[in-house]
Image (cartoon, rainbow, N blue to C red; front, side, top):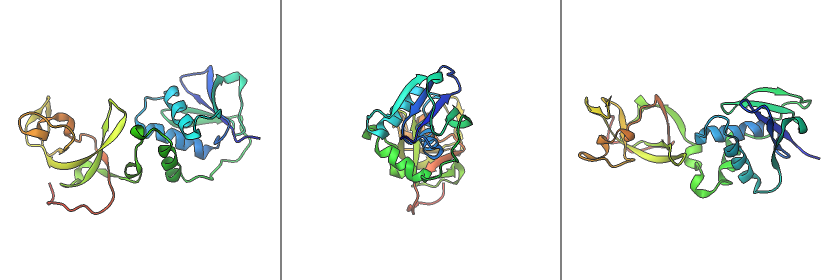
Length: 209
């Protein structure tokens, strides 16, 4: 007896990842979403296996096998860019047993502490960068360690250039201390994305920025 599924990444036609348990679509989508939130490279099979193995606690519930030698109760999911783009060889109805947000929290708790996204991050809201105010707590991605760091919005840029970018009116945070005038002189502190994750809850503001 099993609840198995196979994940075949689009860039690899020879091997698939076999999950003996949690092979339903709701579980697979949660594992994929977690890898996407972590910022892992597209179709990074080792990182996917690492994430799922941590969730299973290291038991023998996940394998990398030749695609022509494995099949699953829930068929084979074709995956690209951390999304299911196709599915084949399945007879079961789509499984909808697990809530995505709750599943993401459980997956995160199973990861090494230093690699966890954290409950604050997973419960955060995605807002327009233009709506940020002084004192807002946001999560800025660290590409070196593939983690999000909690930072505080402390100002907006002046009409000047930092590392070749005009930072006028762009919010910046207290992530890296720069030279000269501190945080505002380090381009890596500026939030250049259109949207960002903000911690939910009431924050005491010094006013709009």
